[in-house]
Amino acid sequence: MAYMFPSAEWLQALDEKLNSDERYARIAKKWEGDIMFNIEPDGPLTSPMKLYLDLWHGKCRNAFIADEEHEAELDPAYVLSAPYGNFTRIIKNELDPMQAMLTRKLRVTGSMTYMMRNVPVVLDFVRCAQEVETEFL
Image 1 (cartoon, helix red, strand yellow):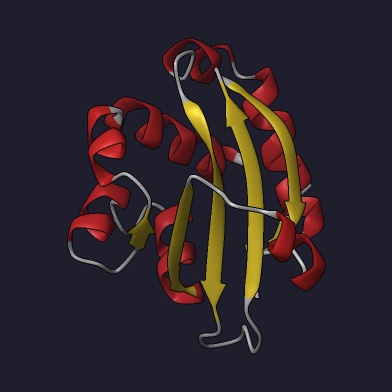
Image 2 (tube, rainbow, N blue to C red; image 1 turned 30 degrees about the vertical axis):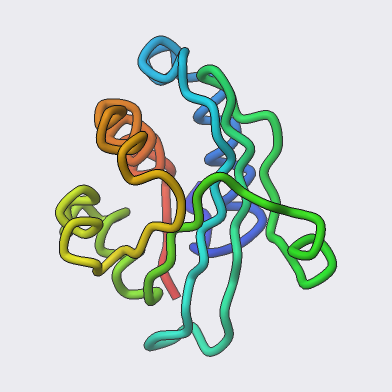
């Protein structure tokens, strides 16, 4: 079954993938930091969406769409912001996530140093997202 990106169903499928993937668990066993994906309106996406994932030692402890109420309570270690089209290109494997960060097609708030020291974790997270059966708007 394919899940529409972005949606609560897609995010739940990603959560399940991360928590069942032995490779991700092994590679991300030392990762500490929650992430907010700030998906900016672009093309078919007409309003912003924020996806929150609490990632800790190779597991996803929580994942949800952050509304204004949630946002006020959250202080994620990382915020990754980009237009919808750039996120979809990363999920479709048409845009390398590290290249996107370095060229600011995907803007990072948080410790870029920590991210760069953990490139294998970042890339394996993206692999998991790419393996979720996805439909796009």
